[in-house]
Image 1 (tube, rainbow, N blue to C red):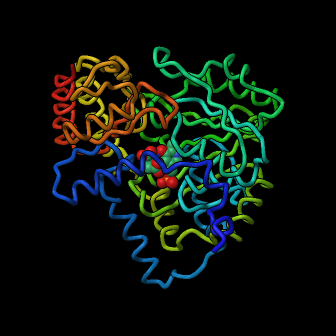
Image 2 (spheres, helix red, strand yellow):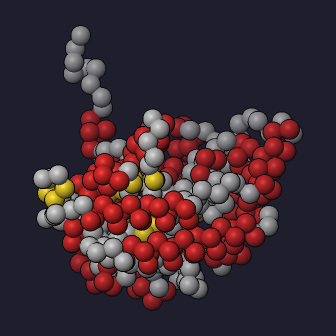
Image 3 (cartoon, rainbow, N blue to C red):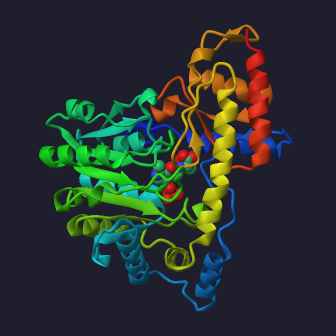
Length: 402
Ligand code: PMP
Ligand code: GLU
């Protein structure tokens, strides 16, 4: 047996397991063993998919819509996405500028494959969603984190962005509202970023998956809407997972310049073929059907956010930014560093999250994989009962520290 020949491909050695999926799986496994874990891991709405959307899939199945579709998605769904982008974002895209994929995560990976060459630098404002750097690394790119400051609401400083740009910079990834911080960029920040992207001639990948999960009157604006020059450099990414509680259906999409959409469609034709046919029919109903279920879910998230933010801020050693979007809180827990449990000193967010899981059976995601050591991420896409109990346990855990 030749060990070298049977080794895994080198490209996998540069990535690590998704921390968000890992912690969720750990909590699930503990629960299966009968352990009473409170899970703040999964970034997944806890509501059922609205009935009208499920019925659209049932109808598609009953109508025999169970075969391959065009690899880049059905015309009907592309048309529904184009209508959505026009109606909600004021953006004119044709179906030919749109590619439907198996979730926004898949859209993002296709974009990296389609646009990045070996050694290309990609600026990623931190804290960032865990999968961005690893997707960049998988295709041979170089992730370049751009730190943002909690005390400035995690807003992006345009001058700091400019300072990160080198001749190798090819792309900037934006995520507003942001997973994990819950921050949302104000229009003036987006306008300044757009100006720089146009001047420097770089791509902007705009992940807008949390656009509808917003609070306190925050209004999401797409960077692509700041004029034709930035629009021609933007690939907009969105999907139905979060807004319509459809995480398991795996439908996301990208919209951008025609030649990029075409390249992504070609890639899909060789790699995955179409996203599931009847899930596409359900997504059409999600985008075109009644939107009241979205309002109901967001109203419930808003109540949970108020409770989790205020109760975490009451725990000594925690400082929690009040998010304007998504369903995560990202408290700073660095004041706990240096304190000990069972004689073991806590020095990293990973150690704090392991301590919370072991001591009080609360699952949170450490900040480090989001590019922000000293923080923890808690998803409040869980019941109010779990939120109250989970935060109570965290408070109790902190009293155990010496
Ligand atoms: N972007 C961000 C910021 C996310 O949090 C997620 C959640 N998994 C995704 C993209 C991907 O979503 P999906 O693949 O379920 O559409
Ligand atoms: N986006 C969610 C999260 O961050 C789901 C898990 C994932 O795909 O990363 O928790």
